[in-house]
Image (tube, rainbow, N blue to C red; front, side, top):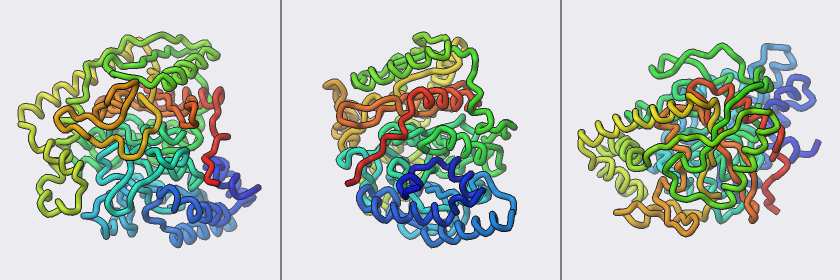
Length: 482
């Protein structure tokens, strides 16, 4: 087996080979580290490598196998952690110069569970400051590039995680999603990314961002659907540190993954009732993807879901969370903060109590509208994003009054959330949603399809995703760095 095959192997396959010692954790880890040292200077996915720690954990994992000790579900498997997630003893900057030298004193729940399952932490991956945008760059580490086209963005805010996994720099990247930050980079980088139901995976972001924290989900970005199921088996379940977390569903997502449902009602929407523009190649690929489900004799129909444009509502809640968290430190951090982030913080501080209360009521209306749509369907299919990966820096606001960006779709200049109309509504509602590759543009960029399920029904989302993966596998495509 050559080194590239090892680097692009699924985590599930790695587990089996480590069990039999056909490959050791040390061999896998060293092979991936060698590739990181070669590729990372090109794409800038890892911001804080932890190779010495990884080698130490891998060695212990191999010793445990030889002694026939109990193995965790991720025993000896290399992973990366987004630099927005606290990881004990490792620099955790949140992408902000204000935390440039911060060493985390504790593990977040998700990291502790991954460690306990035997994961080998390769390092932290790049993120914009506090995950504030759908691209990945910051004042400490610079810009992360899309491995399919180095002049394009990998998306954000889990862009470092996505660029790493897509490039074979580890089979699993752990990210977070407050408006699409797992699904956006998964779509732009040709990966499977899962945002589970809010509460399914404990997280501590609410303590930092106040009410906006109730939008945030932690989860995996992977090349294989089965690897996401494996990770969810580990990280799901209640934890006292998060009062919104819910008990484990007492089901193994991995064991049930191939139990393809006999009967399903699939609804699809290309606009959710409000999206202003959709790239023609995205529309064509998503519709072809939807048609593939006909092989399962599932009911497929156009959904009647029609949301009132929630963009201003989302921006109100999102920026007020930034303002609540960062506003009091604005003066102290001003010279350490990106100008566009400062603009968002000030915008968040400008809302009155009445405006924020109205926004909360409107959020409940979005939730009700989405739940109403799911009374008639089991799964909702949409594009993940309205366009493929665009040029670096295009998502910045260039017109403050209209909040317009440099992203152009079908000749329309999009607002800052206008190119991601399909992702953030499901952060506001808390429904589980995944992005899966469904095609490629004429110039070789990935296109993603979003699969949304009923609340707490990650199992069906994963089963439908696995069924689609079987019909339209994408893993044979790999970025070319030659």
